[in-house]
Length: 154
Image (cartoon, rainbow, N blue to C red):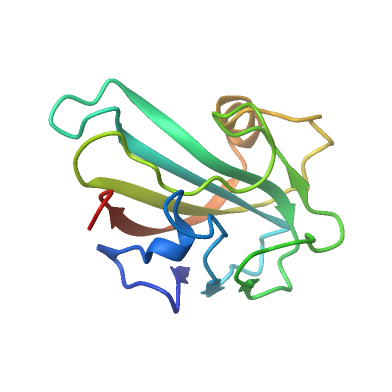
């Protein structure tokens, strides 16, 4: 399974449009190689370098989506409406939806993690990424990662 973006390469810089210094819109994402046994997909975007990459203390969560259908091949730029059946969880701003990179200091890494699950999860309300990760345990059949980087003012 592979996840990519037409906006940035793996380990490449995320363009300003997708950050708090730009339009703060979600980047276009595409994927392929979903296993036949998959019944749903999960997307979690997070930053393990918060607040300072030289002394990280937490992982900041930017986007939480689950129950994405396995028959789609990605999400467009600036997602406004989710595919039928897809649900959102809470990011670390305590809201649903995408929140772009906005690091206080240094160049951070942003992990776009796609998981294929062998189940469709029940409606979990507005789960945090930790709640969702707990619900996914034992159901992950494949995963893929796309990492982008961002530093303010660059």
